[in-house]
Image 1 (cartoon, one colour):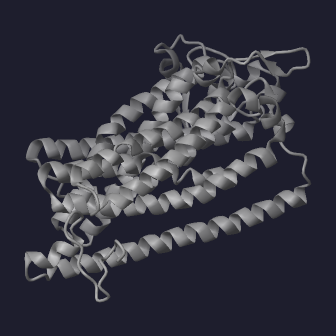
Image 2 (cartoon, helix red, strand yellow):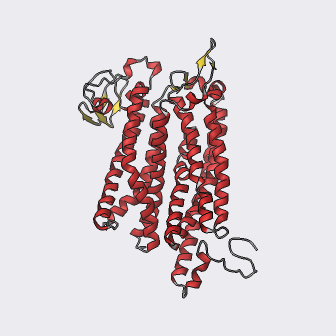
Image 3 (cartoon, rainbow, N blue to C red):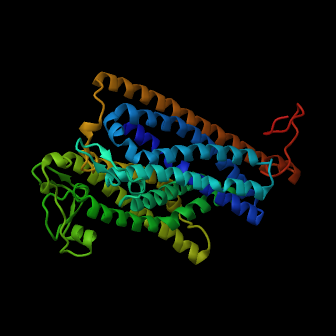
Amino acid sequence: MAFTLGSHILLVPFGVALPAITLLMHYRGLRKGDAVALLLARRWSAVMAVQFAIGIVTGTVLSFELGLLWPGMMGRWGDVFGLGFGVEAWAFFLEAILIAIYLYGWRRLKPWTHFWLGLPLPLAALMGAFGIVAANSWMNTPRGFSLDASGAPVDVDVRRAIFTPMFGPEYWHFVVGVVLTAGYVIAGVYAVGWLRGRRDRYHRLGFTVPFSVAAILTPVQFVLGDSIARSVFHKQPVKFAATEIVWKTDTHVPEYMFGRLHSDGTISGGIRIPQLDSILAGFSPDTKVTGLSSVPAADRPTATQATIAHWAFDIMVTIGSLLVLLALWYGWCWLRRRDLPRSPWFFRCAALAGGACLLTVECGWITTEVGRQPWIVYQNMRVAEAVTDTRASTLWTMLGLVVVLYALVFGAFLTVLLRMSGRWRLADEGAAAAATPEDLEGDTPYGPRPVSATGGRDGGGA
């Protein structure tokens, strides 16, 4: 399950955010009559469709694993939090239909009609994120039910089960995080091209729009990250203690950057900052922070699990801080000169920012799930009660099959993207050599389609 989720989550930022960024570029192209912006939007929509197809495979595997690997959780709690998965499935099919309409509309619909038909796409993507985050936030702060004498949930209140105390902080932190991740990844592609000497308007615009979106959202995400950490402090104090490797309940608690927690409560390595953990948690060094030792060992993460969650959290915070500096660098140059930074180091950092953001997405998931151990439903069901009793040999076989499947799927994904990129580059080189504007009409999103040798029209059938 960890492998499947860790792989699938790398596609999530593009599934949720790429439609919005594509439509932003599409709007710019229509509003300003910018053929380059329209060309970028059209090409990004093709990438969006390929990514969605890959997400179908990885998401289907996940849906099977939920039932096969976690029968205890789904059997007992499915009626409580299952609506979130239902909303996600409905949004998934809606998004598939809208993507098909959007792809079909290039060269076949009037420009503004095409744009307005694509506008619900980001909303469908956000609805899918709503369902998944609702289910996960319920697992962290379960609400909306009572327990009968046998411990089974009854009197389910769907509204309370969806809108749990952690839903708001988790949802907005997730949405902003995936949008800025997609922005940095897309911009990174054009930053590499810029470093290789492709300084044309196509690469400039392809970099500027997604990077501007990401740069604006980066400080917002930093504030939201601080807010969700404080929500964890109030709603899941033991999880907060694991994330911050706090062993003993106390005030004036120091902050450790990295470091390793041992089973006797000692901490080795890392950078110790006196009183900072209490200050961050409650804005005062007198804030009392709950320690791991305040609950029995069976009800808290182990020292190793706490260290894993702590490192994941610190990596996420460190990368987030560096991205804030990168965004400020970009903003400063733009405000001063209305131009991109001129240093090649800026573009080197921008090229790395996308990969760094994907790492933070992984780290955020690890912090959320490992920090909650040993509970799969916080303080209501342990992982050991929820997991399947299938033999280990069968599970290893299943893991092997999933690894092979995902290797083939992601290999096909990269192959298709590279071929598309190569074909577009050849088209751009041909456009640069065009003798007249009429030679460019074949690659104009809303221009006439050239007649092929067989009498048909490119991209649209006979």
